[in-house]
Image 1: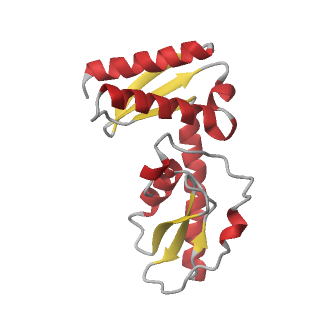
Image 2: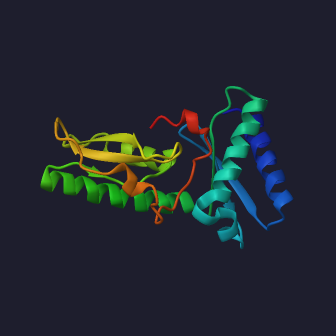
Amino acid sequence: MDKSFQDKAHEVLDRMLAAVGYEYTITSEVQDGELCFQIESPEAGRLIGRRAQMVQALQFLLNRIMRRYDKNAPRCIVDVENYRQRRSSEIEDKARAAANEVRETGRPVRMAPMNAFDRRTVHRLLADDEEVETESISSGNSRLKSIVISPVHSDEQPEYDDDEWDDYDDYEGDDDGEQPLTNTL
């Protein structure tokens, strides 16, 4: 990755955070072709925001600005005190439990609606599992979709009511910063 691009992205994120007025430090590294920023702050909770809305907004804005700077800009990931890693671990645990239930019962399981970042975590985790397959389905919200984990080669349709997820209050995520129409997972 071009060092000047990394420096420019760091500068843009630094200016956004300075405008908000929080104390913070930013570190960055390149992982799998993505530029990952880690923010440490005594006000981490406020920077993460309710249902991760603040960190998602920072990431969305940073990616939009950097794509104006360079149309082929690599994706920037913004995290606050490893929130995304903790969230991914929780999602992976839920996905493993759901996959085990599918293996035991032979019936599909529908996970709660989640954003594209969390769905990607589940799809990647179970991609090499020869006993189950995953599919994202609409949950009535353009940004949030559910994942159905099914036995491989199952013709049985999952039993669920689309309305049961409309008022799902326990969901702790939000958009991953990408435009909703580009979320294809």
